[in-house]
Structures are given as C-alpha cells and as structure tokens.
Length: 198
Ligand SMILES: [Zn+2]
Image (cartoon, rainbow, N blue to C red; front, side):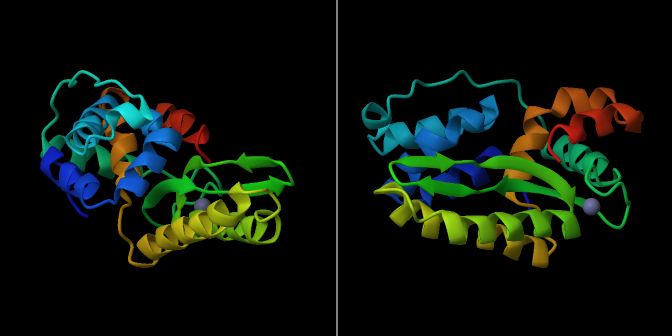
C-alpha cells in the first residue's frame, strides 16, 4: 500500500474477515486517528458488526490531500532514528506485538514504534522471541494470541524488508499532521515527538 487516500483505507478494511475486524475493533481501533476511525467504523457498520463491538461512529475530521500526507511522511522519515540516533536511512513505524501469558492472566502489549529499519527490525525480532517463549502460558488467550502476534510481527518485518511504509505509519502521520506541518523545519521538536515511540 503506497497511498493513504480514504478509498484505499476503506478497501483495506473491507478486505479483512469479520474476525479480524472484530479483533481490530476491540484491541486497536481506538488508536486510530479520527479520519481512519471514521472509515473503519463505516466498514464495521456496513458489515453489521457495530452492535457486537459496541463502537459508535466518529465524526469525519478535516481532509488532508494525499500530497500533504506524502510530504509529511517524508519529513518524518528523514529524521535521525530516535532509538540509535543514526541517520542511516528513512524511518519506519509499526505496531510491535508482544504477548506474555501468566497462566490465567494474558498480558498483551502492542506498542507503536518508530525507528530506522535496523532498529525496528530488532524490536520486532525481540518481541517475537519473548512472545514465542512466554506467550503460550495463558488459558485460553495464549493459544491463539501467540501465533497471531508472531504472524503480525512477521508481516511487519516483511514490510521492512521491502522498504515499504506500513499503513500504521500512515495512520500516525495522519494523526500528527498538524504537529508535523508546524514543525517541519524544526528537527528538535519532531525528535521530541518521535522519542515517545522509540
Ligand atoms: Zn536506529
């Protein structure tokens, strides 16, 4: 996915199964920026899943052109890595999924991270190792969350190996567009923002 226009986002959500949509609605949809949330909610409603997941429709926020978003994405990607401080290449971002099972307690820890390709790859890899060894020991969540989280991290590693921007980074740029636009020539301010996601 190279474009973030609403039509593409809608197609992405529509391509998901009911189970994936429900899962996303419960665990992740609240992290979406309003623009993406509105599209997601419309797909949920069209699929008649809205009562099951108990979410309301959010208002459509102001519209940003695709050119604006591409430019703001470039501003973000050109910053030094908030993890290693190097400027070895463009920054990427995605959710890193970690699951730790403690018999009857299931600790799901999905966190959105931004870093250079090398650092993000390492974060995804470390989360996969932790999840692989510690994820299973929760009944019953470990049995399905562990393979699900391993797969999600693996998919995000594939985006990195293709040097492709994951839709979650597009969501982030959408959500932080006013801040990125205001500070596009102020690397220190943008670095402050990025440090919250290292
Ligand atoms: Zn780095």
